[in-house]
Image (cartoon, rainbow, N blue to C red; front, side, top):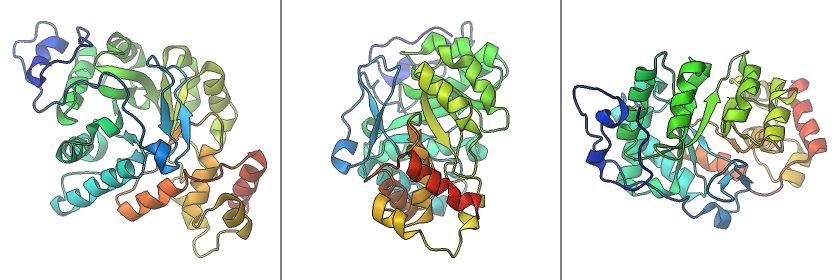
Length: 322
């Protein structure tokens, strides 16, 4: 896979031939936006959302808003739902958020397409920081997946590309490294399984990692979060609301008065997000939602006071006793 030039170029120039040497047929990347050469300005600074620095940024002191969007359930299979999904993306960006997390194989493989269509329709590509993933065994398949991501996301560069669930790291990490700063702005590895501590072995070669962490899933505090902070690797937190258990455990209960007063939260979901972004090693929490109102609720957790360690302990105690 030949590295893609850093210079802007028309959509038809990004072809399969540019990625796969010796390929018989060149496939044009349709409707791709021009290459974004520098990180766009942050609406988040005016929105009140807290920002976190990307430690290994090669573009200066790049900062990301602490609340993003997970898109695992977004799909074009339900035509009636597509407009609502696009509205969630718009709500994120208009509210000062930036990070949209997706993957080539989410929900039948068209989550990326939903995002690409929404950003193209609204002209908001420059406001978004797109993180995607692929899970392929061979070099050729990995290269082809990157090419397809560029195509369906309608962009000449993906801001962050992960090897999904640590699949074929020895094969795929060199592919990411070859194209860092070209087709890919930053690179990383993700995993949300019981094996996620193994990500620690690769930190020296990565800009980002993504893994599961929540008030009721605190295993990453032992090794992974401290190691990422020590190595200067940015962290996207998947499943910051837990795997469904956390909110179910407090269903029907009131948010503690101290949390309302000290942290400005109104819901348990906001309290869970405050817990996650309160850890100093966390860069962005990426809760999934298909509801614009929930997106607004999630963004509100990124505004106002960030809990200190004592407050985080009090938040965790709510779920320890639930």
